[in-house]
Length: 241
Figure 1 (cartoon, helix red, strand yellow):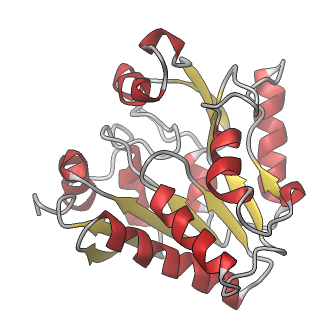
Figure 2 (cartoon, helix red, strand yellow):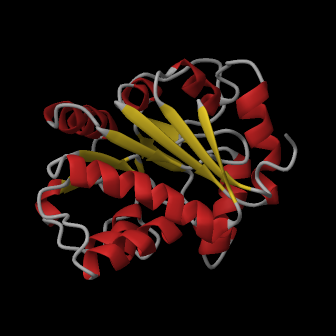
């Protein structure tokens, strides 16, 4: 794991956007694995700016997102499809048909998991997977567990994740209790992984990620076994190291 120190959130976002843009420039039809949440917003803003300037072309890029809330359709303003459209897809010259997010309104959970796994496989592999990291070590919605889940699955969210996400909803009762998420095996199959972290709240889990053992109770710890991982974190997130 290569660790890149950033001064602050803005610097972290720019450094991460540089890596993603380099991937697009080197392979214009690359497959990007994308993440949601507050941390990647600055990255998507930077990529959008470069696209508007004509320095970046998304026209052949394909994307596959990590996760989606169960029960929310793509028009719901807290769904991850809505998030991606608002923060990236509607702002760059990407073909929406080449963007993929799990269907939160699927009637059959098992069938949706199998369908989304086939979508990932059909793309021929993820060239670059962007990840955030939860305060409890989750990546995507792979929550602390006693096993590493391999494929797309429906997961019950932990109370800490529900609490963390409740700031985005009118009340905690509105936060979905389940989500579809890409499995650890699918994340680890990406050719390169880029993980980003910002702020003092992430300092304990960043320390655990780097210095702790590999265990499913800290899902992100599995990234130590990947051959090409870059962690970009700001001063505050690295403050306990």
